[in-house]
Image (tube, rainbow, N blue to C red; front, top):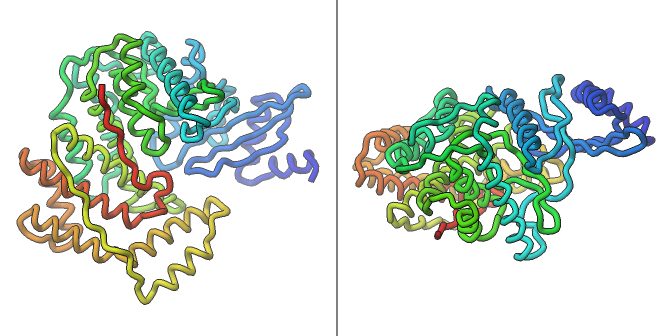
Length: 448
């Protein structure tokens, strides 16, 4: 197939053709190739020809599951432009697509995920460079973001909680079942606001995302969660990113950041912000997992829901000195129906994103068949011991556990923390290999 015929096919695509034509007009070139990035949001790597040169372009679209998603994406575009204007290495923004809303930007050089670093020396060098860039962002005048419409927190509680009210509004709007993990974490955050936090800075929000090459960061990525707040918020966010993309020794890196900036904070402040940021993920996906819309990558979303719900509870337990023993997990045991699920998993394969999405759900279903009933019995027995009476079913258990999270005392919280962590660990065991990069994810302990 010639480049001309390939271009004609892309521009005639009934779903994306109009967007590709819009991007051609924006760049002032002819589309040469388009490769879809297989992920949970629409994204494309494009190549255009302009004035005899090839121009690599990246299109980043809206996930389509958040009612505020398009507005957030537009705001991200403006943040990228503001950061670039202040000397921060980010991808150049060409403009905004109207046909299928999204950002059109350059494809920056380098690769993501420090797990791909060639050596520990390179990993340390890149992390140090990223933290230097993060410090530069934190030193920017907060008015840079205020001009983009970001509200500036003024009280210690507003500074510590940051954009939590926005996430809580999304959560309350979509909530469709009891969520004891989220309610317990929100209550703890409000009851344990750090004292004396007064500094307000521009934040990237979802810290730890960047491209790198030869020991240096080439571009800061994914700033859609930018906000104004405590600079330690971004340091706490690193613990969250590290769960899926190992960043190296964060205690070393954060200690170096503190020394270089002169900012005053302790390890507990970082962990508090890690709890705050981690719980945002379950707050934004729990209702989708409870009632999945068509096409949702359920295994991925359920993995996020479980891991980023469990980790805040474990961090709280670490801060409060609460020991949690892991549950005893029964060995998988095939049922009469095992051959059906085995055949389904094998048929789906993993060569295509949609098939792989379905395969992961099939793997999940197979593990539920193998030991789901026994793990549910463990949940109900343990919940009964905590509540003083065995629940009638899982719905009854969740409702009573949420009530305990909202109204219980200090002693209740310790027991509830232990139970909820262990319950999440049981549910993660059912997801098993379908969790991919989040299998056995654990947060680092920060020592400063």
